[in-house]
Image 1 (tube, one colour):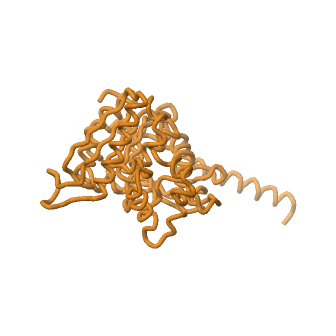
Image 2 (cartoon, rainbow, N blue to C red):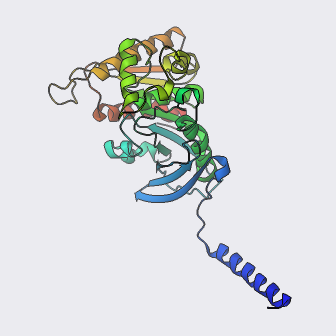
Length: 326
């Protein structure tokens, strides 16, 4: 083939490439791998519900799912319209589908102008960058959520910078910790693990969760005595001063049989978390928190019927944090 023929072939290939780019569907751009995370798949799972499969450097290259409950008229390609975001965090042994599977959140009318973000946090990830015996590294759930995923959503998926967060149980701890360490506009914790350093019972119970399915319990935050500073950095009670300037909602039952429970149901876990929440509320009051609301409703166990109710109860506060009319 002559040099002239080679040039003609190269020109033809360039024209074809440009034509293909013109005809390709205009999907939102994904994050570059050098920035820590990239969307590798998008799945429409229901009306207004989209699952993003995200490969994360903070998670050691692992791909996890994030469910978005999208607002009316949502168009991620419209860079002139960014939506306020509500992050809903799942609890231990749940996943990114928990909130839509177990509650009526997808049908809440007041959320139709909000981008609701429901990220995967592993069944026992504790919304933390794991200590890993002092080595750090993956999994780094806090980094994934508050840096990689947040930036990805704000750049390519229509999320604005105004955000609030709510979560249950393990996610309640995560919600308050994120609000303290990465300031948002409001936070709510439902039956949250909000003071794991409260006493020996609380520490031992959490170590049992860390051990989980045979995992090394020291990998998450280390030993509660030797690595007390690491524990305290993830304990909302010890982060309380950073929560005094934003609206915070705490709710919990006392572990006895409540109106939404089958007869005879009790929960030692809820009783423990109730004591933790009472301690955190007292500390916030002592620190002069002006925007604290609590609902310590007495009889009630560790279950979804209560968490759905408390989501509805806290939504007016969360929406006001987003600058919206409840």
